[in-house]
Image (cartoon, rainbow over all chains, first blue to last red; front, top):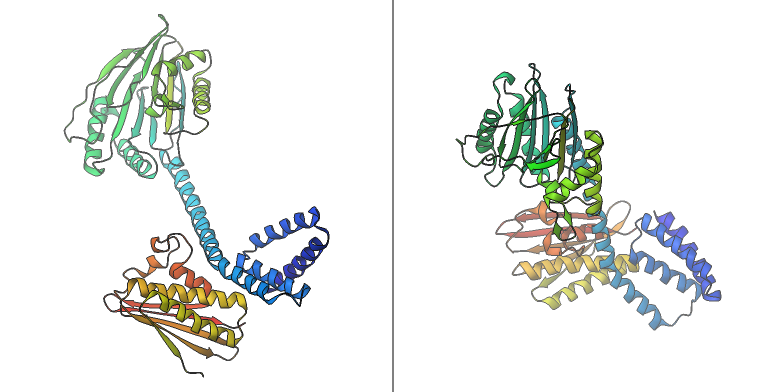
Length: 337
Length: 133
């Protein structure tokens, strides 16, 4: 380090001498490079002032004493800047460490909450879930039953970031522990509600939509715990309608019962499930209307379900200047035959 | 070894007195301008802590030496409230320094050695050393 300063001292002196003679731009450019080197090697401002003082006294041994004192004065004034610089440096390193720790947590979350999109005969499924920050507070899950039915969960923790993500792991493991044959949507929500009510901080709420698709009957059974309503696309009439359902969000009251509804699905019909990160996209200061979501979906309706979902996401990502404000999860199911 | 000299800190201007004693000693020992300025800044921080948070206290200076080198040792002793959470005050960005890089972490950076003992309700003793290179 001391050697480095000496080397820089020589360079500094030469450059300054040259500049004093010529006032050329080249010397200024070179000192710019030296200065970057100083920063890289953590040379503090007071040390640079000192370099200057040394260079001056070597070049001008008979420099006015008053002027020398003024330079010492400047050096003194730089000490606190040097300290502040070191503090920022340290804080920046800490921030970097924190960020990489969170990204480890995020990839662990991906592994823990991972679900594979199942292949169901006659059903085209598209799904995409993107966190606003590093960790996702949305959750979706597919369960393929032995009897050929498909369980579909989509959930959102009110709040985002790490607490929301931790909460979701609990939901996932509760659901994994249920024996599949006995589980209708209403029972799943009823059970989860108890788990959430017992284990989660009262300030945290979880909304969930749970559906079970029964291919042999072309029917969707579903229940909702205060979740953002999805949409049903009726291909025959070419109309969208909201999937109506009522139910209290999870975790409010221990003995909540949930209603279960039924929807008949015909060829080319679509079921669109989402979280409020989709419907509460913002265009500037304006929240978008749910019709706008449907318009965008319509625009891409000719594509396979996964492509549709991807395109819709791209549309809203761009609309929001590539900065999501909330976790975004969109799922489209289309009956092919 | 030279006798130690101490400065009592009761009012803000005593900080200046402490800086003066410390700087003179550093200059005599042969510290360069940059290190003199750093030692003086560390003295300011120590003395300000006494002035702001303790009723009274003092800073003592002495010349120390080991086999290879000479140095200056400063000891700040006060009978103030003590420090409840030492790790916290030694953390960068802790509020009292207001993100200005000073405070006790600043003293630690400015000096070569730093030691702190504190007892709640009784007071604090801080020792800081700078070696002459």
